[in-house]
Image (cartoon, rainbow, N blue to C red):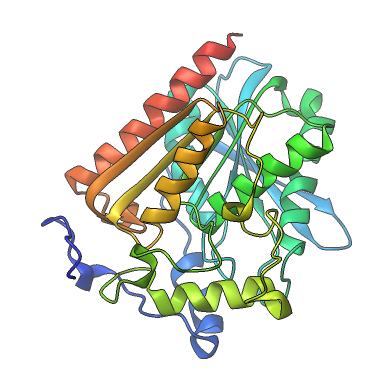
Length: 307
């Protein structure tokens, strides 16, 4: 079955093919660590949060922001094996002044050098650090949400489960942008052969790298792959977005449906013809709609939290 792709999406424009171990170092040093072009209106400050691991967070703050402000903790994508906070800077350059928020992005450790649970430990440590330092950062701890894209959204969903189960921190919502959730790779969409950006082979490489020796086991914990979770009760409100030309389509729709069944306020958006990483084609109508819908939902969440 051929995958319908929005007519404005030119697959030839995306510079990366299937991810392999041989290409990984090159990809880490090129495509995803380019310095983005920013407006200059949002200040960025980097903090080392763990001297042992070297993990850092970058705090994004627009000029003239009234404090204490709400905050969005964001986890970048990259299939658990690559990516950086540089891609987050572009998003926060727009959303921080638009929404009146402080943005925090985390440079967590990557697989295969650091498999599960290392990256999840990093993002939990980062979130805990934000709560601990909320006062000096000008953040209202009662108005913190979490979000991520792709593998970052997979980590975000696992983080929401971990926060609920540990009962120490409190997040107000979770934004899951095309989350990487299901290590079994058995859904129809995950088996499509004509996917762009993140192919079925790349997906297998990402999961093998992240799970290490656990890959293929039947007892993978939900903290490693949230699609494995059997209890989704009492999670924060969720937003799930995915395109029909994304290999994660079916697992995302299934997870959103299960969140709804568990009584979690959930908004699901499925975009016909949108591939994984549709934001790369920022000039297209579908990418603009994809981003605008997320921004509107975030605005409603922060407005509902008040000041």
